[in-house]
Image (cartoon, each protein chain N blue to C red):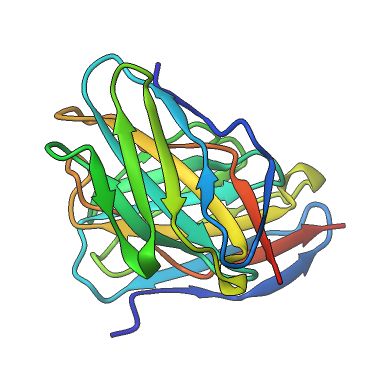
Length: 114
Length: 114
C-alpha cells in the first residue's frame, strides 16, 4: 500500500528566511508526487509535481521541491518566505503507470511571521 | 472558466436528515472524486467516477451514495446523517486518473451534523 508522511504538523519561519516542508513517501513502484496548498476556506490548489527527470522541480509562487529517491523524500522549499505563504500544505503520491488512487499526507501548517 | 463548483458552502443538518452535496465541473474532465477532510487526517476518498454512468467506492464510502448521469455533475448523497459525517467535503476532477495530471478541487462544503 502506498503512503505519505508529513512529520511536522506546523512549520514556523520568519519572512525572508528559507522554508522547508518535509514529505516522505512509500510506493511499490515509481512515484508521481504532488504538492498542494490550501488557504482558509478554500479547496486545494496544485503547486507542483514530480513525474520523472530532473530531481529539482519548480512550481507556482516561487516554490520548488527536491525528489530524493534513496531517501524516498519530496521536500517542499522556497528560498525566501512571504507572510502570504502561510497556509496548509499537502503532499500526495500515486504509483506511476497504475490505476492507484492519490494518497494525501495529513498536511503541514506553514506560519510565516514578520 | 469556473472550474469545480460546489454547493452549498455551509450546511447544518440534524441527525437522520438527508441531503445532497452538489458538484459541477466545466473542464470536460472524465474523472471526478469526492473527499472528506477531517482535522489532522488529510483527505480521505469517499467515491470516485471515471465517467458518466460509472462510479466506484473509495476508502470511506459507508453512509454515502453518488451518481454520475452526465460528465459535468457528480452529486454526493447523505441518506441518514450521523455526527461522524461532520466534515468538510471536497469535490475534485481530473482529465484522467491514471496519469500525472493534478486534480482540480472545489472550495468545499462545510457540513455539521447536530
